Length: 451
Ligand SMILES: [Zn+2]
Image 1: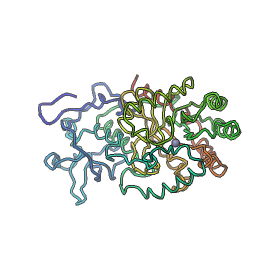
Image 2: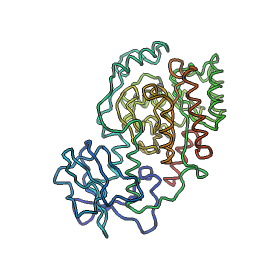
Image 3: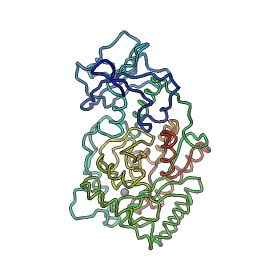
Image 4: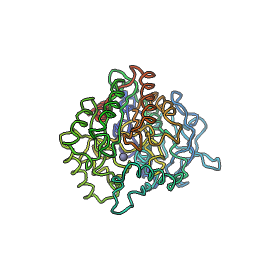
């Protein structure tokens, strides 16, 4: 960024953004890029407001009219509305009064009332949500919740669900899927006149898919359950799907569970980490304790080719990501939009594409609600509608299966899961790139970042 003559503003070049933030739309037509004039100072916070497309909204994009966390600006910092026809995007107050977030000024840089890249970051980093609510089990001293028998856990989870109540009454993100970050990126790319004709996924595929499994205990890895493990793997791989099995390091014995781990990898899936234990405390430990856990995980799972982690209870914080960055290539613990993750935080990163969580750590968002949340949402049938939306946007389908007996390792739950996979395979035959999360993250960072 370079300072302009005006002390309080700077100009922003969209193609100079972190490519994973700018997304696929980062490449430019040589010499034709339009600059954005943005305030030099970052706003202090956000509040929920309505954003509405103005007359200068690009015709090629579906117009926005929705609630969103809007950067908090003092009255004096809000641009005044120019002559009609030049507003790209408005913020509308509850009183109905509108002020322009982005103004098109012919022959000049677009004027944004806020740096749009910083705005997108507040979505990806979930900073609009304030402090994420802490899951109840992470507050239980001494007891490691993960060691409770399955039947007790099943009961405890439903009790916790009732205790947690309906979650914060926040109108954002939109559930069960929100892609506001992707809408804002597309707007920035379009208004910067950035080329958008690149193909993202291999062989011109429209979207990507990876199947993820949260292996909270060693149950599915035990020899006596090998028949069920084989059945799940067969159902998935016979449709051409692959993915990752995230295992809890302290629960896995690399010798005793060797056959199961080999079977999973031989089927083309990767092994990832699901924490040292499943006690929900990872994000709340101090940095040195987080560092020790990350080291223990990778020591224990050495030789299994672990590249990524899904944190237990999807717990996360910017501080945790800076620790994970030193040990893993990717994390996959942030939902696109959800209030269904035990903590009922009603949060999400609002994108269906990978992005940078910290340094070189790439985040692969969880784009579909997990199996454990589907009862309240109408079952697997509703996932098809979300899958259609994600494929239309060219993003990544990331479903979750919990292969434990109190969750989805039973007939009544597996059949609908298999039926969902068959439906996706039929509907998008030849159009999805199926790969493991590590492969998807690698491909995406190369395709977008040119790394
Ligand atoms: Zn888990």
